[in-house]
Amino acid sequence: DTEVTQTPKHLVMGMTNKKSLKCEQHMGHRAMYWYKQKAKKPPELMFVYSYEKLSINESVPSRFSPECPNSSLLNLHLHALQPEDSALYLCASSQEEGSRQYFGPGTRLTVL
Amino acid sequence: KNEVEQSPQNLTAQEGEFITINCSYSVGISALHWLQQHPGGGIVSLFMLSSGKKKHGRLIATINIQEKHSSLHITASHPRDSAVYICAVVAANRDDKIIFGKGTRLHILP
Image (cartoon, rainbow over the protein chains, first blue to last red):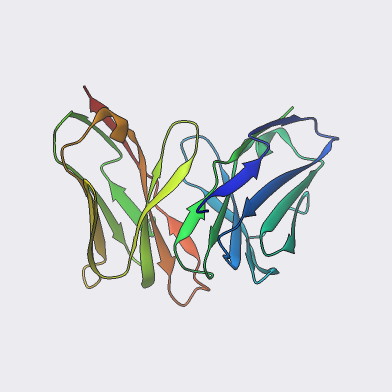
């Protein structure tokens, strides 16, 4: 299994909603990543987990809260988002932090 | 100035043409990725390389560490190669931070 899966594929939420994005991989990778990508821009790194511990937080607002319940799962909890947070949220994993990354298909988020 | 520069930004070519996309970077790196992103968003990692040359099917990636330059070549291009190609470097001495180029939008005409 060389796949990173993300759910849901699409999400529309209001500014007062609480929702979660999920990412899963079964490749035994020990590093997992969240990226945000606005239209026609390259992905921007948000968080990195290495061995289930938060390794990098790129000064992301606290309305985004990552969680790594185990080595195969990575969640991104969303609360009180703004319309400008609408974007494609990509998850990736790699054997170790810094090695080749495998990307999920992304969740397209729209905040109304 | 961006730390990772790609050229060209946009490229339109006829099916069958040989395609070259260039990436120059100004930071020390431990590795460089070439990524492919199709409309709709999914990203595929094409290559990760730290020296020399790699080949996979019709795709070839080269890197010159001394010149801080990498190229992605596509031979016998096909309309299904139409996508955005992104160069991303793993910055050495910066906690392996990944720095992305802005991407090259490739359109192959049938």
